[in-house]
Image (cartoon, rainbow, N blue to C red; front, side, top):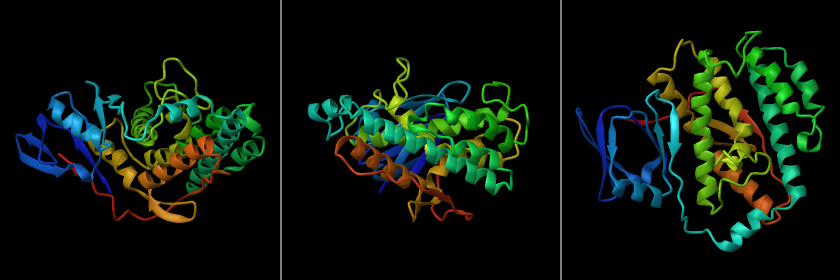
Length: 303
């Protein structure tokens, strides 16, 4: 199973040879088995990558994420032809039952708010206001409790009454956006590898968002990024912080009563959601608990 999240930060050439990703930099030549790789994050604009390597990585469903000159994620590869995609599967996705979409979105919103409450509990904060809003969630979240909770949650999380997710000068937002981008890429990867397209969401329907479905399904896991960022002491987004955010994919959590890595939990959860929408699966279970230990598997291949 792929487990390595490779971060490229230096002037280098990335190429393919004999089922290996070859990274050539001023410090030497590194070879990484492609079968080990989960995500390649190219966190520099000074790397060169060959088309042969891009092709091989996509064949193995490895996500490649590129950053801009500000070192923020700017684009990612999307496999156009997964082996299990068919016209019938796409027809089913376009015709997902409206009641099932509504039910799933309601479950997702409630799971997200519960996880936000768990984060505030972990900080010994007053979570009663959030629980009050959770109890007011209606079918399809028609009263938008998700947004109401967010306006109360983030100031609690960062202990700042005026904290706003829309403030571009707030350094916490840079870290949150970076982490969310990695999380979204992981969700998108599973959607595509299961044969579906990312454009057709169940709640997000923006013409300008190529990842509407990923934007829907990632929501319950955002609080994991929030919790980690809130514990960091920083003034700007450093490479060390980025490594930490990528490493969160190897964080051990309890998901639906089982101890597993975050990336495996995401894969299982996304698959269950897609089966619920397509194959008539009866329900989707979304229970996330944090483990206050350093993951044994929190290993990155950093170059």
